[in-house]
Image 1 (cartoon, one colour):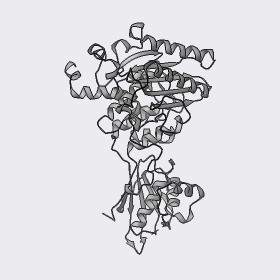
Image 2: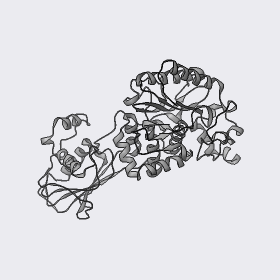
Image 3: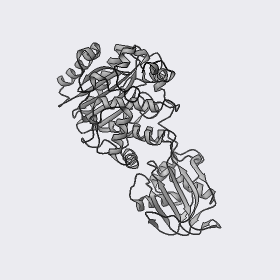
Image 4: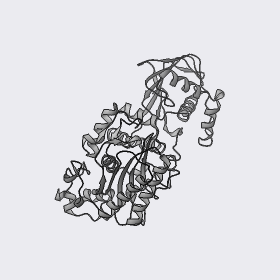
Length: 444
């Protein structure tokens, strides 16, 4: 371990974790068991205990004041969870290792498991095959669409496919539109319904108003496709016939995750979890990658819908940091997967979270949750998770924002946005329907 601490790899990782400005030393770093794979398993914290010797007194006082204020305003019910750490150094815990409903903080686990399984360069692939030749603009046979699990195959993507088919010289399909594989469109899981939406999107001459609205937001100069399907929409489990015409690649995985997390999109999260093999696989992948105890993350789906999805605040922090580590060699940061305060809209648009903070929000009927990282002058990146139990959503959100503002006041505003949370992806303008993700093969 001492050799690792002096290595360039460890130096790079400490920058990303935000530990350098948190006054690290060999003693505090060696207190963490497991090294790089798991940064929230401190020996003295492994069993859910934080005593005065392991707490940062000013931070503890801030948490106590925060919870006292919530109680005085009658905003909270039952357990309230708070975990705060600077890099790998834990500062304070209030029920920080106790399982609580995490709401959409569950999407942190889904994001981490997706990255661990597929990698940051991954793109889902939807394939289109023809069962006959192309003559005089007509595909003499069926058009077979084989889904590859793209969770964000929406109107714009189908429009791009229609234009690619026109570019190949196809303006009519003499046979049927056959749907097979893991194909969803507009989140529709029923293959026949998804296929009907695809058929509608392929012919711009008969679009309803909602499709026209989506089309109006696409890149200037995007054509309206004109591909009619003469036959029916048929769903089949597997079809091997036909020659490959076209591959449609999805947005890169980080852009899908960014869109999902900015808007806290439950459908995308659940589709990703299903593609991964279900919530148990997500849970296993996330706990392993973050190095958190398996008992501190219990999932029943990939989105966070329902109070049965539970996690500790410590686990939420650990998973966010694990995502940062996963991305450290990709040119991306955790800010490319989650909302950035003051930059992105979605669930943080009307919040007063400190600027440049990278966060994930969570909301259920009786849960308001927030986790992420705030840049500070004295402590570097401070990672936190707050899980409040209560029903006054607006007041709880406002109090969370005030608590984070007080932490920044205590430690000072960072002079610049740390590289570890510098965003590169514009989450407000995902390139849905971009023509350059269609690979035309012309039967190759």
